[in-house]
Length: 506
Image 1 (spheres, rainbow, N blue to C red):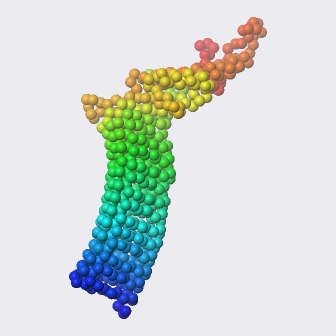
Image 2 (cartoon, rainbow, N blue to C red):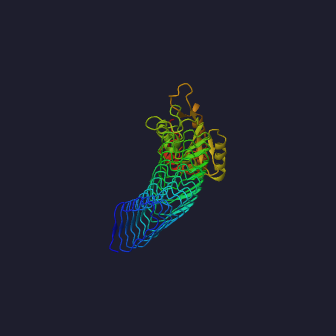
Image 3 (cartoon, one colour):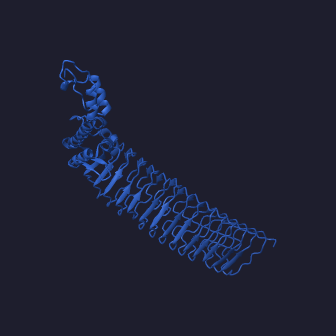
């Protein structure tokens, strides 16, 4: 055929056109060439056609069958939008589907792509409400915004490893989507990409994801399990908000939780935050009503505003790395000061409040916080003999403000003070009557006593090698060790700073 191009709107709105024969040699079908031919039922696109322009067959409401041959490269926006197609097989020569290319095809059941397809454009298959199966081939790179939005019958999708970006709302409101397989290679998950996929029950996030849009899985009301892979660094804003998650375990590589990342997960009962996490953003766990306990890693430097807001069952908050929140002199040397106490209030304020004095645990009267003192106690206990260590452990258990775990960690508990008369007053951690400080001091004294007992042979040896007076009886041949030597012995035994040797003349 000598015809290489069908011009714009060439057969637009030919309502009685039921059959079209397109011959080899045709190269381009231009914009809306057969649009709104409402009785056209089938079409065979020749292999010489490399481009279908915007709306080429759009609105052909009776078009149930189309044969796309090798050679076709580009299917532009709305080329087959609002048609009656049931099956679509894309030849490997097609590299790009334009915006809404097959949108609103309400009878479409299956789409099969080949390895030439690189880009699925915005809303390419949006609102194809009967679409059950999509086979996406390796080689695909981008799934555009709203590409499969509101495909309510879609049951499963596997994202090829070559895809690096999932656009905003790419699969949102796919209410029957129960299986999603994300392969390594995905770097960007757009805003609400899987939002409100209410049948989705589990998902694994590959370590290659570096950028999250807002609410990537928000509103997936049956999503009970998520696997976050080692290597993942950030969890995006509202990523899993309003889901059915019961357990969250962060890999050690995650350094940041975005605003509202797990907010309103009312089934959430356990959170494992690993060392390496630095930032817990605003309202990350807000309204997680069933969360009873949380351990804050030592690497977290500040809790953002309302990050545990309205967590009604939260009764235990543990801060690891107590050396940054407590008075180091007290714990390192056992020096007790009525004026100073054990708490480092400046460090605690920095942890619990943002720059505008907004509290991390707002709208819930958290009874107390626990701060790890393992670094100052457990390591010293580990050097004691079994019997001495058992005595110290018993002493810790007898202190009401201290807790010894089965793993050997030691926590000091401090009550929270909430203002009842002026709601604008600050909420703060307090050690009323220095009760916790006194308990810790007693434990440190007990440890020092047992350390001294076990080191007494060193002290005896040091005294035995002191000078001998010839005019004294043999049984009383030892004299007091000179002051500098005593200090060296105390330093050697690890007592310098909190045990002062008696000096001659004292």
